[in-house]
Length: 406
Ligand code: PLP
Image (tube, helix red, strand yellow):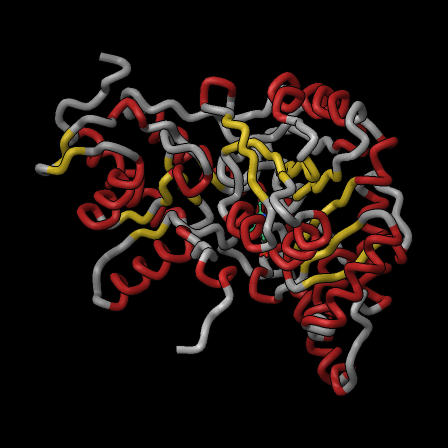
């Protein structure tokens, strides 16, 4: 047998994608499954995005290779958008990538090797650890439970930093918890980071436009502009603009490194397809009025989920002000029995929820928090109501649960 490279055998598949595949199989078999597992926005991009994309096909710009950094129209549109959000970048400090995933992957490639550490709080977006391992880095995870609203505290960050720390990874608003850091909380983390000049800061801001209840987006570069020469902002059109399949992500950071990243792009995928870049330019550059409706719909759905969770004894769910996820701590039910099966962790619990009550959720272990499960509420209101009713019934039928509150 020819040999395969080690990195391929150690590559971790995404739990979320595995669950989503199982849900799809069940649907194909005619089962009535409600899917709360995957974080895909359930709305389409605004009309001006499609118009720009159609026009670009008429002009057929994609008969040539395009610049790896990104087409000028997109770089202009995104830097202008960054400007409106309080960040000062020029087009030679930004580049495009194949979605946010590829942006992160390239940043990990740039900064991690030989066991170099990336530190970040758990709960975290599940793909981080797999990507870090793939490039030869180590994940150092700082657990932040429901008792601290799943938020990283400055003293925890300080304690986690060692000589091996190469990267600090920060995702706000957070997937899977929906938590949004306050200005004071961001500033306190910034106070720690300024003391450690050898650490790169990767800021995954992919949910920055999905913040509710009058809360605001606060960034390390707003509270500590002096961190700019080692901070990278990562963005994407996947979430707020409803364009996950268009695969456009953006990175902003120090000019020299961004130029190196464009070379990685040039030697791997060459360029993001022109039609997708034009559509992304329209998304970043066009009116953001549509977001009002998107946000009010998400608030309504979030409230539906939170009201339903509140009725279930023993469940603790820090209130999510951003993204489209709720992340309840369900550990009070560990040790309980559902239909003859003992629930020893969130994986068993999610499996039972899916197989027995036909609701797809993701176990918290996929995000580094084994006590919880993730509910994505980016689905129809009807599905949400049906799914939450099933969840409530499921918990009411667990025998001998409520270990912590008993
Ligand atoms: N970062 C976070 C926190 C995410 O939740 C996701 C997608 O779910 C990504 C990055 C990657 O997004 P994409 O590759 O679709 O742009």
